[in-house]
Image (cartoon, rainbow, N blue to C red; front, top):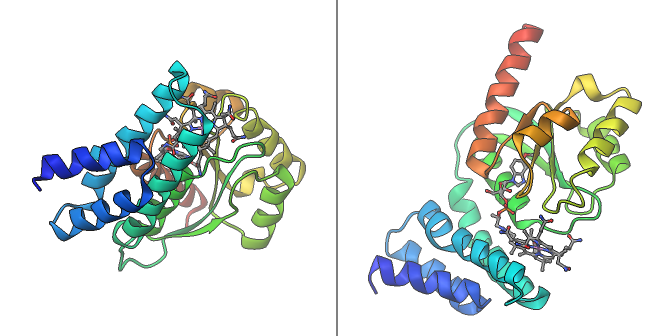
Length: 221
Ligand code: B1M
């Protein structure tokens, strides 16, 4: 199978949620020498974007979206060790979670993998994380950064609720707040008072490093 055929097949099989085929093609791609980023950005992610587009048009429904998501999550587990491969020592600690009311986690998990790959220690609180759970995790783990993911326009307001909870607990100044997720924009991040926003997992790592360096320079450490 040529590279083009493999990527096209991986795209198609993800679209229809054929998990066994997706796992097989992911392994075959790696065996053929394709990088994990190629499989992700040239097949898996575009396929899920098409799933979303079909859902919006009413051609796909929640079950189709669910099986496509499961197929993608399976591929991500194969790619995880390759994407997170690092010899670097820990450069910072981040608490991550998908906000309350939101069960999407594929994007958050990909961000976590890239953070681990860049040398961050990641404490993943999972999905549907309530503000008080973020507060408790920050008190327990004392991270440099807290990351909130939201994938629905209806759950984006939880960013503000989380930041309010941090303020109330006296933690807001102790932690950098980063936000992201498909419907989130830099403008929205500014409005809710987040310190940083990124559109994708790679950009999230770059932004986190910048914010951390700035914070450490200001604190003189
Ligand atoms: Co849902 N869903 N979904 N869904 N789903 C979307 C998000 C949607 C855009 C589809 C669409 O209509 N086009 C739409 C939201 C519309 C909106 O609000 N604007 C939607 C909807 C409507 C829903 C339901 C309401 C459907 C229903 O029940 N009627 C429902 C909500 C459930 C809930 O959460 N309460 C629902 C359910 C589901 C499933 C459970 C079936 C499944 C989730 C499976 C899972 O995650 N375990 C699912 C899926 C698979 C999708 C789509 C198709 C794919 C999401 C995905 O994984 N993308 C999605 C369509 C789409 O996104 N185009 C859709 C791939 C992933 C790598 O990208 O998630 O963007 P992404 O993550 C990126 C960036 O956002 C960024 O980096 C990531 C990696 O590069 N990022 C950060 C993420 N977090 C970050 C944090 C940062 C920085 C960057 O700093 C902290």
